[in-house]
Length: 334
Ligand SMILES: [Zn+2]
Ligand SMILES: [Zn+2]
Image (cartoon, rainbow, N blue to C red; front, side):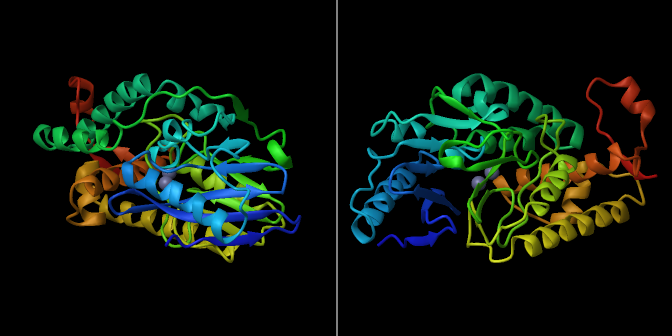
């Protein structure tokens, strides 16, 4: 039986939450916000069979246990927190039940509406990143296959409206644009509860990738966006896109910032001699496998890029870089 969590905001709105299995090893939270009038669906899982099953089972369980008026056909608005497929991949499935307008931040719109094009561009930039990071050709092919995994269920879906920080969205919900983990990432402030999506999570430090792959990602943007949420008053509870509710959002932000500071210091220590991103990643994360290799390389790349942008790391092999079309950059502490 699906476990439903129910939260009541200071404004008297009800937020229901239930888990969906997005991909093997990854569980996402889906939210339904009800004020008795409008019913807002926030994120919709990956579109993977099990995720769609869990989405239907979750909505049915909310109806049976709490409010019989709730169903996918009763949804009046769909909000997508960011352009990662574990959050929006279920849209074509949800479209079978409702024509409710879909809203997302403008910087992630084309990911949903021009998906096929976006995959081609993102994949080519990722491949270049991996090459410059020092990943051997034979491993790169495997990592690119891992990148494409799980992205073949989705088909481009038109978006009806945009989430804009300067104006409240449906139901007066306040939107905060928090680029970093994803270009169009938003947090949604519903009275005194903040839907933090993947910007702030209860136990893990949200994944980072360099902005050399995708503009408006990268650690610099992310840390600035943490500050933005830290400055918001009146967050009694955080509800993330994965894992448990966050009782102390401000404390959690401080802990996440500390973990990045520690990792930045580790990268500087590792770069006492020239190292490629692949070599730094092995020292930071040890021997990881399959998709986790890609995540580790992106995470390392984000930290190296942050330090390089700020002059804390320099490129140690300038002659090679100047003379080759696809150089592997060796980073050294400045
Ligand atoms: Zn995400
Ligand atoms: Zn996610």
